[in-house]
Length: 319
Image (cartoon, rainbow, N blue to C red):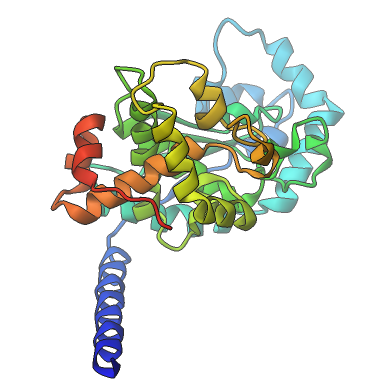
C-alpha cells in the first residue's frame, strides 16, 4: 500500500512539474497589451476639444448622431460622476494589463494565429449585457462601468444573481468568454446535448486560458454553488437520462438548464438550492472527459460534432 501511495504522489508531482513547465513556457510568449482609456479621455473632454477626440476615435462617433448629444453627455453630472467612480476602481492601466497580458499569452499558445487586440475602455451606462465586445480581430471594447463591485449603488436595480459578477475579477473571465464565442460555431441541431456541448467547449477554452482562475468563477458560480453541483452531479445526470432530455429539442430546456437564472428548474423541492446553468456545467464535464480520453488539440475539439464528442468522452458523473 505504501508503495502505491508513493507512486501516486510521484505521479502527481510529475503532473505538477509538467504543468509548471507549460505555464513557464507560456509566460515567455511576447504579447503587446495596448490599452486606450477612451473613458478617461472623454471624461476630460470639453466642448472645444470634442472635435480632436472625434478624429482620434471616429468609430465611437457615428455621423448620424449630432454633436449636441455628445455635448449633453460631456455636461451631464451623472456622466461625470460615473467617470469618477470608474477611476476609483481602475485608476490606471495596471490592473487591465496584469489580467489581459497572461490571458492573451494563453490564447496565443493554443491558437498561434491570435494577435493581441488594441483594448479600448468605455463607459456605457451600465449595459451589463454588452460589457465586453470583440469588435474585430484587432479591437476589444470593455465597458468598465460594469465592473465596480457587486455592492455598488449603480447596480441596485439589477437582479442579484446578475450583480454578483459585476466585479473587477470577472473582467478577464468575460474577455475569455467573448473570445471563446468567436472560435466556437453555434449549435445547428438545437438539441439539449448540442447546447450543453457548445457551452462545455466554451468553458473548456476558459479553463485552459485562465488556469489560475477557479472553476467556480469561470462559470459564474459562488464556491457554495460549485460545491452543490459537484456533490449532486450524479443525480443531475440521472435526471437528464431518465427524462430523455439529451436529444430533446424542447426550447423550454434552455431557460431551465442553460440560461443564467437564480437557479435551475428540475421542478423539484430542491430547485431553490441549485445553481443555474447546470446544463452548461455538465457539458463542461463531458468536454473535459473527452479531452482526457482522446488525443485531441483544442483546435480539433472545436469542430467535433456534439453527439460524436459525447460518445467518445466516456463521461461518467462523479459519485
